[in-house]
Image (cartoon, rainbow, N blue to C red):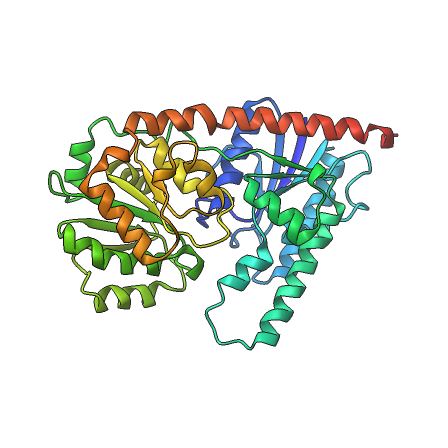
Amino acid sequence: MNVLSTGMGWIDIQYGGLNRYFADYANAMKEHGHSELGFIVAPKGSRLTTDLNIRNVTHDREANHYLPRMRLVKKHTHQAVKSFQPDVFNPHFAFYTTMITRRVIPPHVPIITHFHGPWAMETEVQQTSGATNSIRETKFWLKKQVEQLTYRRSDSFIVLSEYFRDILTGTYGIEDSKIHIIPGAVDHNRFRPHPHREELRSQLGLSPGQPVLFCIRRLVRRMGIDRLIHAMADVIRIHPDVQLFIGGDGPMRAEYEELIQQLGLSANVKLLGRISNEELVQYYQAADISVVPTLTLEGFGLITVESLACGTPVLGTPYGGTKEILRGISDDLMFEDGSSEAISKKIIDALNNDSFLPSREACREHVLNRYTWSRVAESVTEVFAEEVNKRKVFRR
């Protein structure tokens, strides 16, 4: 099939779960035999280092605000409908496709939306400034209306978890029958155990036998990083040589750096900032445990699957997609809740006696059995074929 997709940004330029998914998804669909054309938004002049048919709609102009980005996505989509003649229109970020109406997409072409998260809700919980309640409520309402413009036009939806299905039905009023749950996946050739793990740990400056924790998150409040930092104050009392690396950047970084200083954790907790894809894999491989302290809106839990693919067990909060992944291995891998006390207790238990942690082989096997891109491409293709068949009556 000819699949026309729209994403948000490009992974080599703007790190994030949606961008990672979109890039790997495009590659998987190509390998499955589809002809894929995708549009994303990146800073002017950005080079996309890929052999995939992905184009930056803002490559030759500045588009620093949402409205010009939306117009450019609409313009390129309209042109692609004529030149590419898609069988399916597959948006991945509702906001950029708000202006793409049924007048743009032919009636015989199904609109199948990948729902990667509630944009309005995410921006609401990440608020760090002192906006009044009325302003925040107005912004939330407006963003939600923008999302729903796209969702009303969609023939069906693909979500990565039961959790996001429930948000689509409960918050946006989407019929359950329109929603298909297809969990995400990981590039298991890139994310894999290191053949010489002790050498890698030595290169990272780690002592033999030193316990290492790793967390990769955008530094925003909903990710629970402050809870994890507070938990480390308890952990180092029992395990003074433990090292926690936190990768990622965001608006809360200065506050978290100050918190680390205040708690006297500078020797044990290090904020790495944004790290490359290669460094990300290395930290997963070197760590004894990955930690996912997210408090809300964890739609899939890509980092959980990435870590498991590298053979590193994960401890996480019992919420959203993280819960759905970890319960397939063991409920013992989940904190009782998202409090710093629950996080520290589980980490200390794991470092004292790791008998409840799965082996590195079992971690990877769990991923290979459930979270591969070939499985995703096959399942998505079935959804596409079903929806194309439903709309063939509109074909002239």
